[in-house]
Amino acid sequence: MKAGLAVLASGRGSNLQAIIDAWEQGTLPVNMVGVLSNNPQAQALRRAQSHKIPTAVLRSKDYPDRRSYGQALVQQLQAWQADIVALAGFMLLLDPVVIKAFPHRILNIHPALLPSFKGLDAQKQALDYGVCVTGCTVHLVDQDMDTGPIVLQAAVSVKPDDTEDTLAARILKEEHRLYPEAIRLLATGRLKVCGRKVEILDEGGNYLD
Image (cartoon, rainbow, N blue to C red):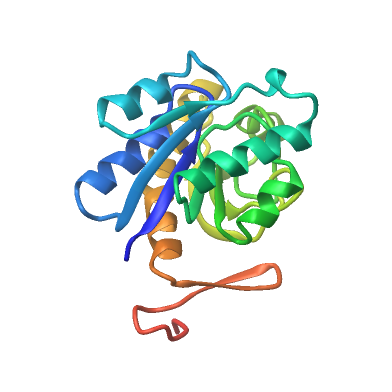
């Protein structure tokens, strides 16, 4: 039985579109059970609706505190029978109640090679620091920002004339390739978490050489 995948997004949803494309092409063996946003104007919602994927909006300002918002998130995700949650530009830090409801089942993608350049404006941080290489990271979500165990990474060279926009565009191409692959590995039981390290198993459940 395929895992149920829910995506949380706050903005345009370009990574959501990459996930939907992989799902429709048959390379991502999941059931897309829903897309949720904290922003009723998010383009991600319209992307989901155009593919007949259920949507929901939960605005944090409609709840008295972060915990009650987290509980509402869990209720919606469970109502959709989500097994895996993918954060695709979801601009809220999840409450621990959500993490506990989906242990090692929540993924996030970040536009830097973690643990470098956590948080917002990762591309600007990379340029300001003067690195020659940056990239993107898919990681499992824990209770802090951008600190969970790393699943996959892709490197992107920084060019001398790069701006935030040009660098972000090249990183985004790698994000669109990497994120569906990480979801596929999790959905097919090929990730084993050992402390801070994530081992990728082969299709027979054995460790890769």
